[in-house]
Image 1: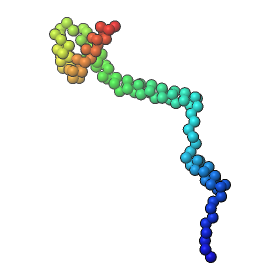
Image 2: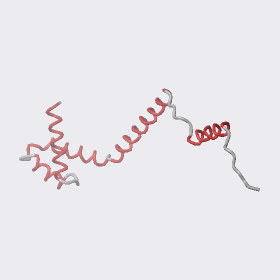
Image 3: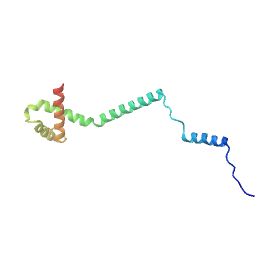
Image 4: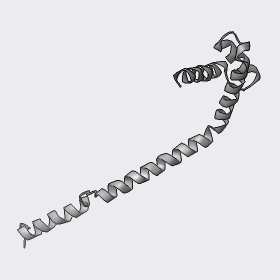
Length: 114
């Protein structure tokens, strides 16, 4: 007695197709509500990241304000921005002089534009 395999019926083939569709998962369908929810979540993540960055850079911001306040009160004592930056970096704030020079230059540009 031999063993023979019969061809699957069309009904079985259609079931197989339905099962394979299920295996791939549902077709993505995003509603307007889902889009708005995702957008709100992204905005909250952005706000949280911004707040965390502000806390992380708090010390640097305080040093910058201290350096700029000192420069504004004593700028008549310096020959140039570079001279001020070297002296402020050595004595007032523990950062490199080129950082202080960048702070002073940006502050001067902002004051001219305002």
